[in-house]
Image (cartoon, rainbow over all chains, first blue to last red; front, side):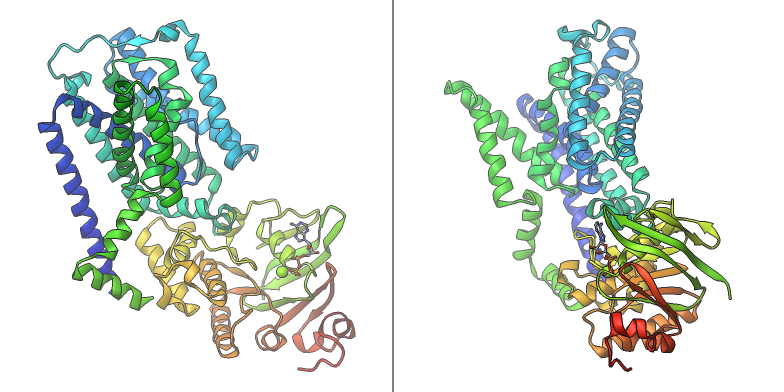
Length: 343
Length: 241
Ligand SMILES: Nc1ncnc2c1ncn2[C@@H]1O[C@H](COP(=O)(O)OP(=O)(O)O)[C@@H](O)[C@H]1O
Ligand SMILES: [Mg+2]
């Protein structure tokens, strides 16, 4: 009976996933430039949110300085391309390795000296701010004046990862898909089990043989490398890199909004959360401009965030799942019932 | 008979409080030993010292002849010592089955292998039917059994059980006693903290008695319950089995 239940859920998940990505593909083909550019950002932040989600939602390690890794990815792509004409593919790989190593070093130092939980989170902010200030004064990477990519020639060049807005939309879509599939894959592997065990109770996990020191370093460097890949693409999409925006506290917060609003630790949470939060932010910002109420977007954003945390503390996606189960058509209701009987 | 675990002059203090005081005992492979004593006697602290969760203030712990008191808990577990927590510690966001799988990942990375081991562990403590429940749906005695199943999944050579039968009905406890005896017959060594003397008398081949952190008696259960020191400090005058 359990097998049957698993397979039913499995099928629903796959169907849901494929449908969502088919719709997103159609959006890329049919939507107008405004929607395309907005949705590119949504998808990139889905991926960035997924990296943060992997670290906190599964690994149990809180970062409030993810902008550090995003920035390292952006600068790796930017510096190599703008200064030396090296393909962004190489830049992405370099950024991932660099951010992965920086993440591992921060984690190693921190846990070696028993700095954990909220203190570790504070350390991530400190590291990000340190990097931001350093990059702001570093002429080689453009300092405060920033780094600018040359305007795209018009055609699509896959080897240089250059193209028009629609091209980048599909790059972002591929990245988001990869992030979701990758997270699902990791989540079901032994890593997912031991990471969740470590998240729920670190000392109990250690008593069961989980080498939490190594696993914390691993999950953090993996998350950092993912964030760097997202940052590299974000830089290409925006066409410029400024230390205050790519490594600032604001970006660290933007990264975590998707998963927090959508559902921490869930596979679809970051997508759902980004889909809900980012367009709302843009809409309110436009409305604020036309009504001459500066900061309307920030106020609305705050209100929505507080409401979600208040009314749906585990996020929008788990609430949708609960709703679907409540109004479910007979077959799944039966499966649900069969599960209850087993319990 | 080989000695699996040796505890030599073990002491641990917390500030001014000496929780374990110069305790020595050894465990023979394949036997069930009971660690008894009143509340606060230092039994759980002893477990923490053996399992690597606490470092001793002085003294040594040897497992299969190797000194382990400087090893972290995950290493001690991987060497073959599994423990339960007296205050149960389920992974709250994981199902009963998933909880029971964690320990198996200390010897395999194969998820389906871990899952079948977890079913086997849950089966042996009578929790298989609740494999897909959430841990907060379990009663306290069931949660204690889950602790036992989690520990069994690590495939231990030595199992440390801290009051896992508390709250069980006598018939349920008898079932678990049967399980422990079967595991011991299969070669598992067990150190058991247990307050119900009837159970201790039934399963344990040796008993170690702690009082105020110090060992006051050790021997076969029949001798230990007749020891005046034990009667006075723990069992109470007039105790008879
Ligand atoms: N982490 C700790 N910090 C301070 N005191 C402790 C700690 N753990 C145990 N103790 C004290 O050590 C003594 C022994 O406790 P414990 O080992 O839990 O006894 P038992 O398991 O036999 O009931 C008690 O007085 C307890 O308060
Ligand atoms: Mg105790």
